[in-house]
Length: 404
Ligand SMILES: [Zn+2]
Image 1 (cartoon, rainbow, N blue to C red):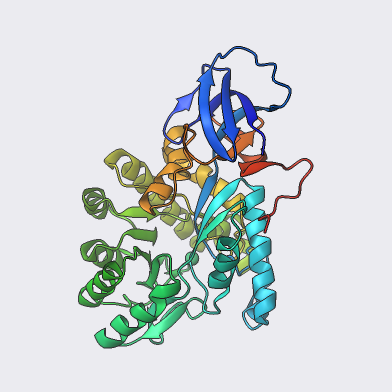
Image 2: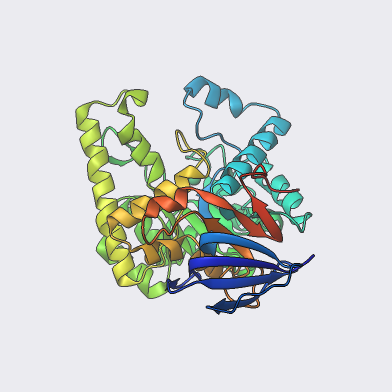
């Protein structure tokens, strides 16, 4: 594979914005050899030159369910999909993956399905070294018997069954997903049902996972559940609605991540007619989202690791584009463009111990090229020209796929 030269006016390296170009990023055998500024013209005709106004690391989707089509709004069809044959679900997951790639996402953390779809897709991807995107997957999540999460979680009962199930799930889990609470009752603006696990049980989950070398991430909203999650030392809080400043303080102290997944709740507010919400329910949704905004701003200020994740696959939450929407939510809540890009690139990769995609010499090229700078207009992040991973994949001439 010959060397390629990416020329760009500006780039984000994963931590900082570089805006005094032109810059040159020289890539050889898929690796970044050097990044230079104002270097003299080269006239080596064997080097292919690609120009892009802006370059940054491939994006990370921190929370989605690949086996579900988020864009499907028909409740009956969504229900039927959950009973469809495995191959159909796997097909859907591959399509979802392609949608993510089209949005410039090169690392996805799936949040689980009970059918083994995410595990199977991960195997396929890991078996293909030229794959454009990587996948982290939990296999199945764990939940309390009879409680929320039947489409993604295996039931456990007492401490013994918790330990046994975590051990059973571990071999095919990149991280352990725990369903710690129920879901939001949008009409009441409160949580449905109590916590699924006590503090003692949650500690056992975290400790057993840790012994097996697994990080934990918990579906968790509502103050009671959040208190248990942070006290037990869960590594990442997913959703985290009804957040408080005190809980954020503990998260900052323990460096517990927060994946706020605005999109599924925002959809309810944007399209109230779909579920038939009245103005009172819309007010409650608005209050929930405003509380999220306030606490996201605080989280960035207090140094809580905020990770972008959309919960795509959920009702109305489309894979790929929803992660981009999530960046806009984080930004309008108060995160700077740099904050937001860190949340969707370098930070999750570091927290999850994945190879760095930072734009520095010595790293594998895992880049997206944009037609404009997100620092000038965040909208520019919606339209990647392509992905440079192993080689250049221009979206103009190549359908965005996993390349398996
Ligand atoms: Zn989810």
